[in-house]
Each structure stands twice: as C-alpha cells, then as structure tokens.
Length: 263
Image 1 (spheres, rainbow, N blue to C red):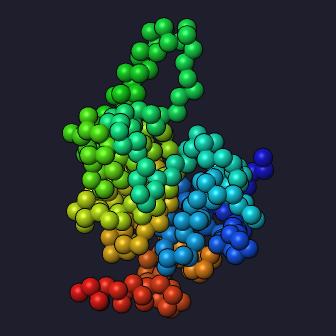
Image 2: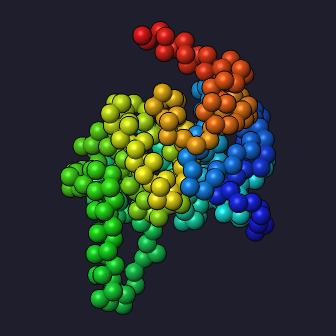
Image 3: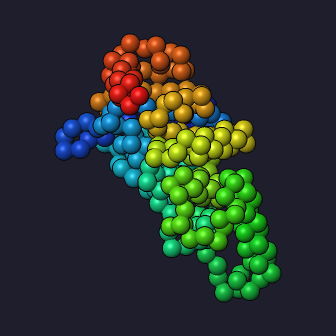
C-alpha cells in the first residue's frame, strides 16, 4: 500500500462517488487533523453523509483516494477500517437494543475468538475482568454508569448517542466519525454530549462530525468544511465560515431564515 507522506490522521484526495451517473461526491479533499474536532456542514443533499459513508467503507469510491495514518484505505471493507481505529456512529443510533448497556460495550471490543485451551487459561478470566472494568470506566466517564444494566431500548435518544460514543471508546478508536450527534436531543443533554467530546479530544481522540445544529456545535469544533452539491465550497475556522458570502448564500442564509421563523 502506498504511503501518503502526510501528517494528517485522515485525508481524502479527489474523492468521488456516483449514483446512477450523478456525482454525489465530486473531487472532495478533506483533511482531518489528529487530536482535533473537524466539522462538515452543508444543506441537505450536499454529500456530507455520502462522504463519511465512503470514508468508512460503507460505500465504494468511484474515483479518488482515502488515506489514514499515511496509508491508503480506499474501498477497504468496514470491518477492516474499524479494526484500524476508525469508528463511525450514526444519526439514528444502532446499538443492539435487546442487550444491556454494559453488554453493548463489551461486544464492541474486537475479539479474535478463543480456542479450547485459551478459554481454560487463567489469563482468559483476567482479560474478561479487565474488559468489564474498562467498560464501567467508560460508562462513568460518559455519566451513564447508573444505566449499566438497562436494556438499550430503554435509553433516551441522547443516552443512546452517548452509548455509541462509549462503544467507539471500547473499540479503542483513534478517529470517531459521528453523524449528527446532537440531532433530536434536548439542549441540556446535547451540551453534555459535546462536553464529553471535548474531554475525549483532550485525551487524544480525533473527531469528524456532521451536524446541522450550529448554535450548539460551533464552540466545540476546531475546523470546518462546507459542502454543497457534492463539493467542498469553503473551509476554515468559525469566523471565516460565518462571514463567507457563498456559504451564507447556499446554507447559512437558509439556516438563519428558518431560525427567524421559529422565533
């Protein structure tokens, strides 16, 4: 595999994706810096979710390249990308709802399986105990440890999104890709989710986030990309994006008008 020679944790080069001859992604170049929170915004249908699906292996790229830690991972299957440390969460959380919160964390940890002899070894029991201890530490960090024995279907939407972050932590993710982590979540719990993301950034985690609720998420991000019609039309820090005339025209203007209508 070819090394990129770049210092970014993840970056794409002219990434393109077609659906029925239409370009859902058109030569998209996005860099994700290690230890930072990178945000992708844009109107519905702009290609944001298609981008993260292609990066994480759920869609196959038709053109272009994806590099992670200097190595090309273009079109690798999702389970290989997952094992390499990229974990993607979904706009609608996807836990196993008939398992408990603790069980959902335990199965997120990659396990190559046990043989007959290894299962009889004292080290196997120790490893299991360490996994449970790690899971409880994660639940305590996320402030949902009191829910450890609840079934996942009993959790609220915001709690489920915290559980998905916990599953990514359990899998030893280096890069967590989140699709609308605070969508449909009340403002108090949304702030709690974003606060946990900030604390994880301090611990060295990297985040790539797609989100519409700019009023909540902007104070927590380091760099922003704006997409429209499958292309990146702007990038920069908050002040640059909020004052970009093209961004205001294709996205922020509509967002402001919607906000005004709700007042």
